[in-house]
Image (cartoon, rainbow, N blue to C red; front, top):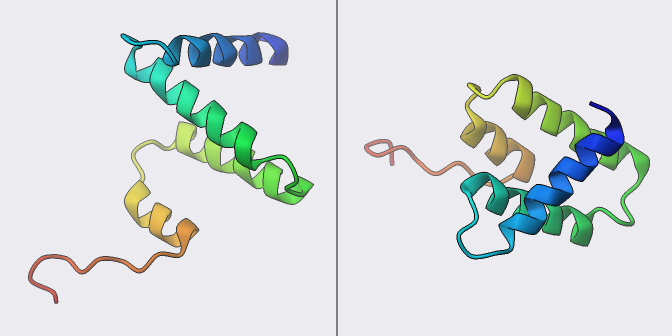
Length: 85
């Protein structure tokens, strides 16, 4: 699949994701496209390359503990586990 075909596929999913009755994947494609289009312009090349790397990592290793990684990426304090307050 060419880059253009991949982009066209995402755009098609995102467009369907705006409508009522969209599938979960279509709705997620819309949400992701919206966030990227609102936030990526103006980032430097290293930051946009890192976004692509993060997406590749998520795709390649879906079994990783993404909650832990999300906390690290977003630099949010970890919530204490029940019983460890």
